[in-house]
Length: 239
Image 1 (cartoon, rainbow, N blue to C red):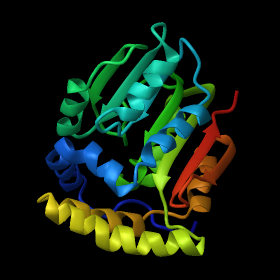
Image 2: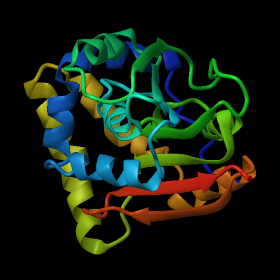
Image 3: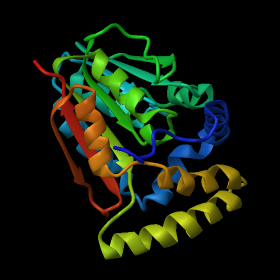
């Protein structure tokens, strides 16, 4: 792991304020930036978490809560889902969204680096497009592993630098040119210029898997999702 990026170099307060500013357009921009593939990526995340009725689930860096609500629909009324984010703007949008049938959702402002939950208190931990925004990747993964129950899964969905030629070229054009242009058109140029730089500082998929193993998770595995620009990592807390 020597020489690997240890965390997002941007000031956490500035990152939080940026997400506050873009909260109103966040879901629309996500759909545009991913050409609509983000919905399928969320479904894959829910499936990988092995959720079942009655489970207690934590969604870290939940944003506007799309992944949170998807989890709530699966675990049902007998379960509970906690959506945690540092951005109050994102949480406000999450609370305003249409309620889905399923588990009650508790929206909570909090720091992913210091999760306000007891050890071994949730059946699954999810984080979608959030790890690359945190100041210490290793500490964040360790926190998620800490709160997972024995046998519980930690699932990380994140954009990554592609390797296949086609996705790599698309990534270079799309995220370095088109996404910043979309940001300028929506008067959020600074925020969407941030995305390519956050990807540059994000570890390789193998390095993320190493962080999960270092945090004590077992059966760590990962795969590329449709489009070749997104990875899905899964690890389990030892039973």
